[in-house]
Amino acid sequence: MDNFTLKGMGVALVTPFKSDKTIDYDALGRIIDYIIDGDADFIVVLGTTGETPTLFAEEKQAIRGFAVEHTRGRVPLVLGVGGNSTIGVVRELHTIPLEGFSAILSVVPYYNKPSQEGIYAHYREIAANSPLPVILYNVPGRTGVNMTAATTLRLAREHNIIGVKEASGNFVQIEEIIKNKPEDFTVISGDDGITYPLMTLGAKGVISVIGNAFPKEFGRMVRLCLDGKFAEALPIHFKFTELFNLLFVDGNPAGVKCTLNALGLCENELRLPLVPTRLSTNEQIHKLLASLRS
Image (cartoon, rainbow, N blue to C red; front, side):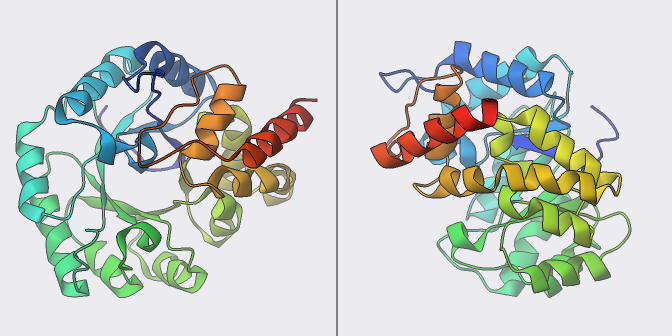
């Protein structure tokens, strides 16, 4: 889709597995339809929530093709294309098919802990080589390094970089980015639990995990915030506060897969080294879902 606007509720799509740990494409189609029927604004394919570190290259290729074919242009698709080798990411951008996608989401390089100058140079190289607009993704809890507000603002002025998914949890940092960014650069939340307060500061949406399970309800909160109706949105935020915590207490996507299983959308299967939620968490999620649906 042309003229993609980074705004609203995007959903970080899970990868459902069968009991033998192969990809369950029937379930993947059900979840995509469920998210689209819930009026999501866009879907992120092959993000961290999709367990991409455990997927083989041929599986990623199959998922990319399936998502494009099954979505049939009903919502924009964003593709996760990241890594800790700049050359490797650039090579991937030149070799994988990108037809059907509107932008790429690329994470701060992980494990090798680059300097701020290295992060800047990494993204500048990606932006120069990507045929699609680039969304930055700052998640220091996973990468081991934080992209500072100064680096983000420096990149915000680069051609082909349209926004940042901010999951640092650092309100001072995110507020500084929102306050000083160019008008055409968008800040969105990378954390469901703080989406509401970040949108009161000027963030324009979220790439959501809970949106896999509650796209309509959580999407309504995001749209109300975009319309400046924060008083109407607040009760929805409060409604999900406990679930926000339960979804991540045993790691992502264990919590949301437990939830999707309870909703009848997929099996509760993950690939090692990730495992399903503990029994106590599973029970709490089922109990909470019963109350949310009553």
